[in-house]
Length: 204
Image (cartoon, rainbow, N blue to C red; front, side, top):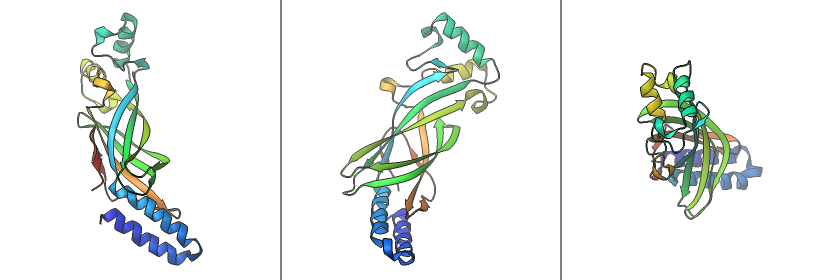
């Protein structure tokens, strides 16, 4: 039994004693949330990728852009900030015979093993049973000038181009996730972060 599952069960028992009228609902929530401990996660795709407001989803080099867009990017990277925006789709797969759920995900984004940014998604997510999959879209905003402080303008520009791999796979991306679940409105946060890439990896 994982550490997260033990914490959920202990919390559920304690809450049941405090609120006996709702004990059935609490135990049902605990069962659903406890299934999360066996779920698998992966980075499924990256889309809506833009640099300084210019779509670079399928761009491999600066010459792939129009002259005007290339000039805009060159000017933007030389300015005070160089925003990278995209949506990173995270898949959660549930191998359990009962549904799993979470209420919040704290995350850290890394590209090429460099920490880019961190944040949280406050969203109720239900993952269907029997290998059901839920997709969690996460909107990302990174100032590459800040994240790659000390790098040359050319290096920052090249870093930002061609981030989406074949089939828009985020092959250069990894994320660290820390899920939180609620049992009768009491939050239980996983102790530490789990690291995920483009292949499914479960909570250990």
